[in-house]
Image (tube, rainbow, N blue to C red):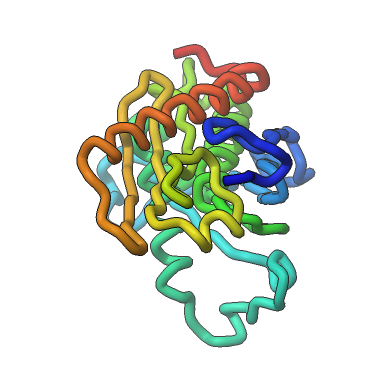
Amino acid sequence: MKRDNGRKYNELRKVKITKNFMKFAEGSCLFEIGNTKIVCTASVEPGVPKFLRGKGSGWVTAEYGMLPRSCTSRIVREASRGKQGGRTQEIQRLIGRSLRAVTDLKSLGERTIWMDADVVQGDGGTRCASITGCFVALILALTKLKKQKVFDKLPVKDYVGAVSVGIVGGEKILDLSYEEDSRASVDMNVVMTGSGRLIEIQGTAEKEPFTPKELANLVKLAKNGIDNILTKEKKILPLKV
């Protein structure tokens, strides 16, 4: 099977992270992987959801959206429909879970950090790119709070990265483009910490079921890709873990 741009089966698309992409957000970046481009921002607000009030804990949550012409045909804005779709809600929750898994919420105090992931251009892997980009934006926002003496050290326990893997034409491949994803017999998203611990695995057999051995091999392939993404994160972030 020939991949786009002659990529090897275990090769990521080109990754580029532009810090401080948005002027007014406490933390932001433009995260690009191949032709997928996502603007990620972190906004810090006082207060927490009702279930956390009075407990001295903070909260990290997320919203996700795709611009109308982020894909080959126009996507109707969900606001005009009057409600969010199931896919949007699921991705938002995934982003939030992934970031909370490595955040010391107690150290935040009663603050909420809103993560926004806006897909400018989508070519596969938008949820994984959103997680990685939002992690970068989160760290930049927390660094700003640290400089303001809100806390002595960054309330983050580890790095986070995410990538897609799958089986296409019988081959296990890393970082699927949209065209590859549409042909995949197995489609999987893996979220992992810098220390190699798993936060979430979303794996689906689109056609033929897959074996536990194939699952293990796909996770191993994902880890190799995430390690490469984390290397880029570490070059631009002040986080020491």
